[in-house]
Length: 252
Image (cartoon, rainbow, N blue to C red; front, side, top):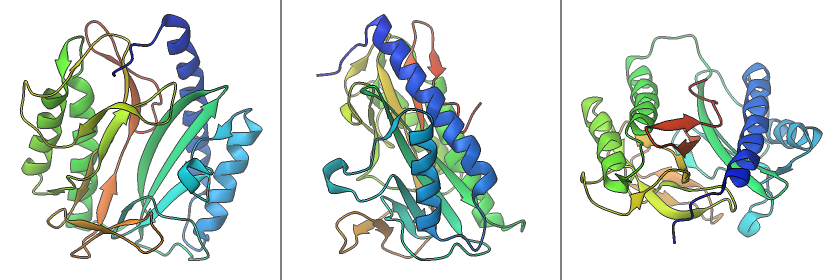
């Protein structure tokens, strides 16, 4: 069942999202080549605790870290380890916050390079724009398929592969709620979303075909063709006439 949040619940999710925004502001200044992904995760976890919240991912279904850090061909659910981030790595950082039982979720892609690689820039720009276009499609009475079709259309314009087994989701009282929000679809299809529904929109695209597999660790999703992937995500409130971006991690 898709849950429509009460006014006080929306306010608490908004507080959770504000903490998550501040965490990513700290990550923006901290992430750099030479850093171990495990060190980045520890920094993220400590930052969340210091702000009076809990890392929502830690021990969620057995996940062993405070954040998902996925590098290059890894799409999502990367487990932080002793690997050092390198110049020209494409690093996806996905973080969730649990503030007094209210959840927010966001992700951002960092390209650790000053180079103008046209394909990487196309991947980053297209994935980021798909998030924005998906948010702009929101309003009271929107179908899930309306949002999905807009996201997929952006991927096609940028010649990017859509990862069809992954997508966005409801969020707020739990880290993952209904509905599942695929990044491809047909306008007018799927469940209807109403005012005060909160969803995490998260396009995940690749420079290849979009096929993925799960590593033996049971978590990390990797492109089957080895192509690089990008991932952006915001926690968004549906309003009567549009949307409110609660996390403001990608689009502040």
